[in-house]
Image (cartoon, rainbow, N blue to C red):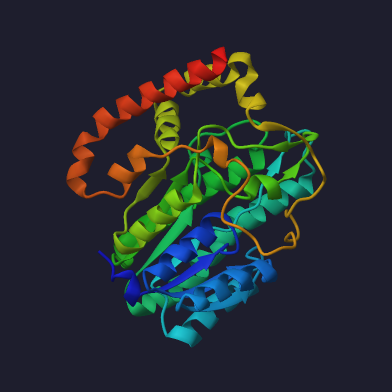
Length: 339
């Protein structure tokens, strides 16, 4: 168990919108000293000012995590301001939708640079200070697509698989050399963030999340829990557990289910034409937001609330809850198919 949040310095990269912004708000409410980083200065300064108005302690560091010197500067400024780094959250990500054939090579490189190399940069920036302290927690935001890939998001899937693999190797190294430095990977299902509004599309239409969808506060609560009670992994959303389990049981069967009626393609395409606006290379203007455009599709997550953020004894009930979640998801999918 780590120190309470009101005794921690927490760095959140990707704090201007979505999950990162929700996590910043939750950590501020708990009394943490915050260092927030993102590319979009307007949105970043907006969330920092909101936290200050609420009585929180925060500094904002504009940075593009694809560039190592800028991430190094985040860590340096955190230590200069507060003297330590207790928890570092790697949340920043970009996305691009389209077939592999239709995706420009430079777009693939950019997704990998931000999502994977950006996470690696964050880890490398935080580790020297945590090693000096002898303790700390690194929280990497993966995805259910770290466990199972889908079409139209090949680069994103590759980057998130990389986050999972890098984190697992790092965890073993730290377990041997620095057992009080912890690595948690959070695996969210589809989350109602501005990511889909910000994603670059090569499909002719705007993308949308694969249902079911969960609200960003669910993942933010998982991050807060992991900062105080470090753990190996956290699944955010019942669908993340079911999706991961289906991949472990039978990847081939999962392929076949996805291809029924090509639903895995159809459910990622909205009916809105693509307007060409995206944040793949540069942040979009504006003050940012926690939520995206798909709140009407969102549902609560019983699994995550009860088990992923619960005490150890609750995990004894996990098989029963998993079966129940699977049944609910099956009936929901059948209902959608018949409507």
